[in-house]
Structure formats: structure tokens, C-alpha cells
Length: 264
Image (cartoon, rainbow, N blue to C red; front, side):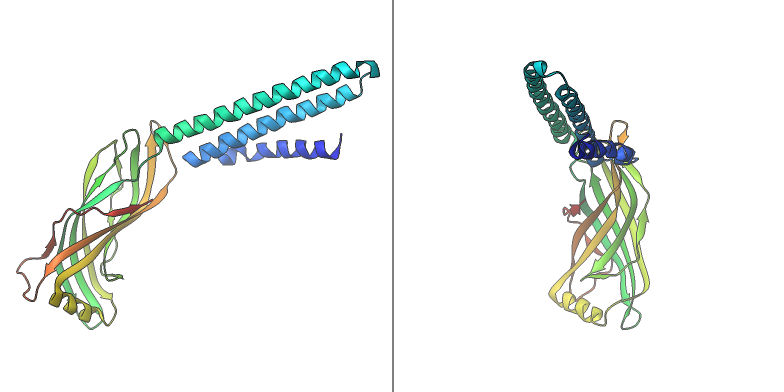
């Protein structure tokens, strides 16, 4: 057997030890695509190696049969080319169809209400805070459910985190379902920049206070009984509140219903 044929056979058999690694649990869509493509390549290599071995057998046949066997080999090559082309086209068409039908849209979040009950500096750089948050979560997909895992929420002001992380219980969201999520965000003696008091005072003079309410966690897609691997996602909501020179008797509130930005 030639060195070239030997390399092809080694490449073919080296595919199979890694096939179990291409199907993690839970299976992700990209892993499924990877598995199908790898399997198709391995099968095609197997057919190609078999044909090479057949051609070597034919080359050792009696001389008077050479022309007839050469014609047979050419026919085999043409059939193999047509079969491989059809096979690859079918595999890619199936993958494209699955992607178009099941490609999930990222979840949508909107800010329903944010209330600041406490935002005081105990010293020049230690902050006490209390924020109540209500978010609306929507799954826009018609055929894909979403498992939300490891959800945590916090508030930030001008790039500084002003509450500790608050955790929301994991939950499942069905097709096109909506859920209200509430969280109490607090901070006690959190270190902040020395300019924090100055920035708040300047916003009070301007009459507007802007907070960022952020949530991050992991989600899994569900199609039928199939569940994907975990994907990290991040949500950022902007709450603008009236904050004039005269402080209101109640909490600072934002009830705009603004859409949040989401990345997966």
C-alpha cells in the first residue's frame, strides 16, 4: 500500500475516536452541525479508501483485461462523485433547514418600574442603597422554549456598581410567554469613588438621575425534548428618574416601560 493511501486510511480512522466528544450533553445546535459534517466527511473518506483499494486490486489483474477494468474504474469514480455531491448537498440542505426553522431569537426584556428608596453616603466613599426593580421578560420564539439559569441583577451608576448582586430563581419560559421579574437590590457600606457625591449633586442640579439596571446569567434553548447547552446572556436597562432640587417625599421612580438591550 502506498504512503498516500496509508495517510488517507489513518485520517479516516482517526475521526472515530473523537465522535463521542462531538455530542456533548446537553447537545447544542453547533455541536449537532459539527457532528453531522464530521460524520459525512468520515463516511466519504471510507468510500474513497475502498475505491483506492479496489483500483489497486484491478491494477494487478491480467494485462488483457486492463482496458475493460479501466472503463469500470472510470464509471466508479463518476458514480462516487455524484453520490458524494448528492450526499453533501442533502446534509447541508438539512442543516440550513433546521437553522432557518429553529434558529432562536434572543429573549426580550423591558423595564417596567425602578424605585430608589435609599441612596446615601455614610462617609465620602461608602454608600448605602436600596432599589426595587420590576422587569418584563418575553420569549419571542414560537417553537423554542427557554430555561433561565443563574440569574443575578444589580444596579450601577455612572459605571459604578451601587448594590450587591441579587439572585432570581431559575425558571422556564414557554413559547411566546411573558414573565414579570422582581428584585430588591441593596447595598450597605459599598465603596464608591470619591467623586460619587459630586456626580449625584450635579445630576440633582440638572434634574435627572440615570441608573443602569443590569442582569446576567445563563440560558438554555429547548426544542421538543432536546435541550441545548448553556449560553451566557447580558441585559442592560436604563432608568431615567426626575431628580430636582427638592427631593420628593416618596422614592425616586421610573415607570417608562423602556426596552432593554440584550446580548447572548
